[in-house]
Length: 249
Image (cartoon, rainbow, N blue to C red):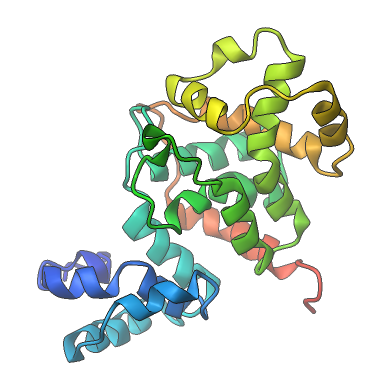
């Protein structure tokens, strides 16, 4: 493997082993079973796969760590196309985090921006369930996963970033016209613009303002030509947000 490469991109790794060890079964084990436990039983083990796993441990340190888990997950899953836009999930995540940092947000919000679509990557519903008329509820899936590692300053804006789209469509007459085609398609599946009662309930959420700021970033972070720092750069903010979560220290 070339220096600086990732072990899962090693051309010496067979497709059979990659298929068995890189999907969510491996990620689930590396994250101490915090992903859907049932998925781990779908993949068998091979001697070569175990050797590759040990090699990964040496390269990244403890692959059971949050850093190792996210590196695996985004290295394997984030190269899917982001909806109908011209960027993939990784570029969208990096642009979101970069915009949050440029806006002067703190480490928790930058982490939320980086990981707000993690829910799209922890299911087996295909790359674009909305195209099949299915809402993957990625905001709820993602928030549940993040809650195990971070405080509400990270998980709550993620949980609310889809309701924030519905909210903005209800309270800002021109917001709907700013939505990308894939956001328009998913809006219908997610319930459409909020009713007055839903608007009131949303405004009562402690992190609703954070969710609205995240939503605006979400709609902007789709520029195929935008240069950003790499994923490793933003892990410093992940580390900081993780260190201050409730019940730690």
